[in-house]
Image 1 (tube, rainbow, N blue to C red):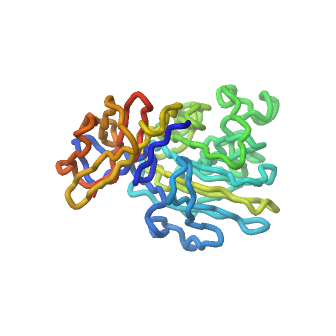
Image 2 (cartoon, helix red, strand yellow):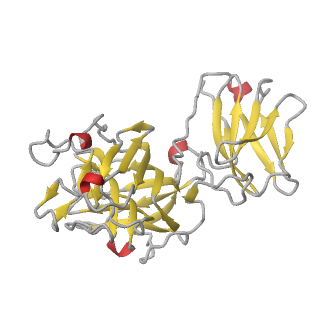
Image 3 (cartoon, one colour):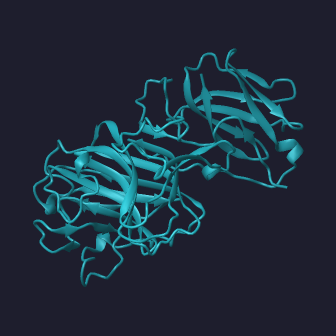
Length: 374
């Protein structure tokens, strides 16, 4: 039978410190697992009505009872649904990561756009048919084209689909696989290295993207900006020599998670969970499930917040080689415990309140989970 390890906590890897446990700078700029209980953490002007932005119970990417996700659905016809977060600061380089599922029945043939990272005024979110000046804004959205994910990008150096290179342009695609240089894909370094997969509805994907604004320069020849993205940990870039900006003052400052349709489309939308923006790549949760004796390998972690203790409660005999480790968001080992028949209760009174990575290792499995301490 398949091993299951059940936790009281949400099963995720991305951690947001509310209290630093070391002297290193926290790379996390923003985090939401949609467990806040409301939508107030977002900065939308609408403000996210349930008809388009539904905070709902769903097991999510880690199949956890009581987990919440955000569902985006677009009304019939042309329109969109989105989440906007004005970040607490501005950055030359950022990573964004979230888990995403297209609902079963989603129509990938309907023309659509996604969301991603944005620099400049939020008033330019979703702006199209215009080439940025290099001092006003740039955006890169990860979305399916022909069912395959790409970075649909507006920036100073746009060249792929420009009726007027100095003004009227439609977004560049990274990677560009629509031709072999005869028309729009005329820079080989921006064509596919690995063809992105055809996306499927009804399953969760780990979506990651990175934008590096590079040096502010005055010509495309000098450009050293970069874009990149990953699906389930597989890299499909990087795409280099991108001319993002002409001034250092133009920096990344907005996360925009969006679903937009140009016309008629299916009622089904997308589900989102475990959203993080950071200055370093976070990556995806990895688990290693194996077939074992459920009576031996199934156990709970129960927390006594008033006494700052947690206890390993086994359904049967917990393997004698079970080790529990607590890590910071940066991967620093803070505590390590060995579980045996007599020692199953551990104190965390010397750890600040916040979120940590809890790693469990034994002969049954190795797994990473989120530990909430307060």
